[in-house]
Image 1 (cartoon, rainbow, N blue to C red):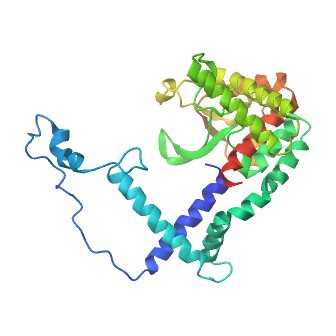
Image 2 (tube, rainbow, N blue to C red):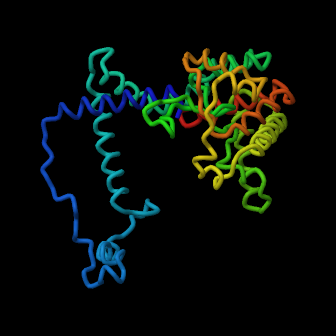
Image 3 (cartoon, rainbow, N blue to C red):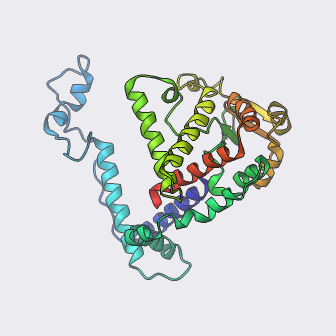
Length: 322
């Protein structure tokens, strides 16, 4: 999750808490453990699932618009309805300017104004794309990634702040393998028909993204998309597999920042972290192999290709909102 999005959700949740507390209605107490779904004709030691859920399974039909159903689906549906009600009330409240209710209401109203969204096209990200256009070298690219909150993670660097796995009382800046848009590394290397079709569709998606944001030459958009895929494939070569990522010990590497710079001399980690307005002398790097490979690729890849990778990352991140 991008930091700016995280702030938005924190604000939203804070509002929900405040607003919910103002409600005068009280929810009546109900029994939390529903035993009616049991099939007591079954012995639990013979088939515990049927004993615990048999009647519920027999009497429950999966809604036609759902792929599955159960208590968590029901909880999610109810939460969606209640959240929608709160948001609609906030949007209609004409709340005091600057208040949390006004900000949340306006945010919801702007998201629901689909006509305006369509009218704007990709205008909301033109400023970000212009900054990428102005990049002339790798150092300027790092400066952009470090100082533009929206673009810190994903394109080349995967990062977040979490508790140290070996010191839960300390929150640390952590870096993870990144640089790829497909779900995991096998998508870049398997050659069965289904995986090839996924890659082809991904290239078409990247090409469409460029076409919708200023590229007028269809052939050039396709060529740029293939170049992005090729670069991501190089990144994927250095990725750990899903199985390898399950080993917590093998994915825990603590570095003094200066030590990490020795591992990847083309990346000035201290400068990058400082420009993020983060103060720390120690970081965790889940998969150092990726950043070692990234360091080498930065030397062998043209700045124009790297810029296209960042452009696509910006467009892809914003696509759901445009």
